[in-house]
Length: 452
Image (cartoon, rainbow, N blue to C red; front, side, top):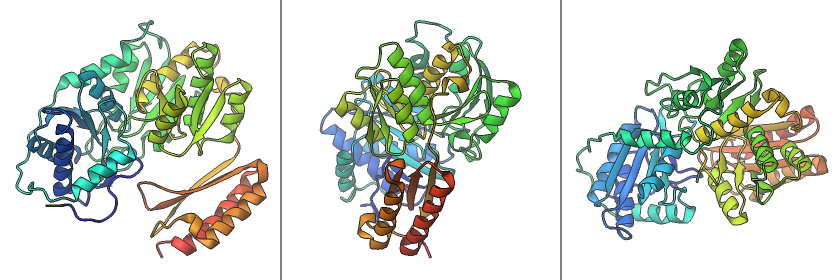
């Protein structure tokens, strides 16, 4: 049976959809597993795949469907149960596997879920490979009657990943005395974050660490760090860290309870590496969404920025092309090519916390040189996604805003790769002014593309 030919399966970060609906229905997921195993079998005898995911109640079922398809194609599955997405990327390389699959919808709420693919080198599949696999999925398969595959968790996989987070350090307890609050989003970071921070010497308070299969990201995690911020202040912590559902990103909170996004983390990490002579070339990669204030602050330290499109896969591709070590996004996806092949929220948390711990000043003061321009970022629900530049009224409104901003700001207008949204971002010197501009543009977009 071939999956229904509906929309493109793969977005900017894998497949994502409500569980049970296309393409996260049993037939499509089993076919995906089979076609992936078949494709890998052309390159290796009995290909091996590392498989795991987040804490959603649908994750194990999706893993079972994938394993059924993979098994029929002759692939060997190493199942790790609850694992952060970056753990899958690490374990593929550690085990010498042919591919990895992370089952997660990242920061989305239950009941969404998703599938992310990793190559044998631990990087996310590129768009061309995803398109080839997608084309294979539209060929008939005979998987309708495949029985459910019972999965057995290989606990050594989690142990290996945990050991990787602490094993390479010259200092055994670099976070000794640091008071940290951790919000694990009731997600994949839950079994790991508190344990690794305690091993590294921190005094740890954990929040949202009781996953029940349905509460992942619900009022918590990197998209809702408000309670974490309150806890940091109430308990007198030095900092707080919020992960998303699959722990590939991290957002910090300083000792005052102020939320510090990926731009702040890039700034601290880049300045720290440059000061130690470990940033060569002396540049980082940041997306078009990163605040202009980051660029200006790094410039004062002699550090340049190469801008790229949105998405951690795009960040990594740009880093490789430019030979740059560090890059990331405002969302907290940060990649240090010397340590990881993809965004790893736990690695980011540890490395940035170590910089803060070594600092002679509080976290907030370490960021004193990072002055952000006011920024408005809003999402607009759309019924369709035609090219924005092909919509005369939208294009004209955007040009008028760019003319008004001049060299004092920026406008970015794009679609979400995974959701029916247009994203509007405006930066400028006056918040009220850019809010009014955003409202004007959103009004035009809603008239042209709104859901009605």
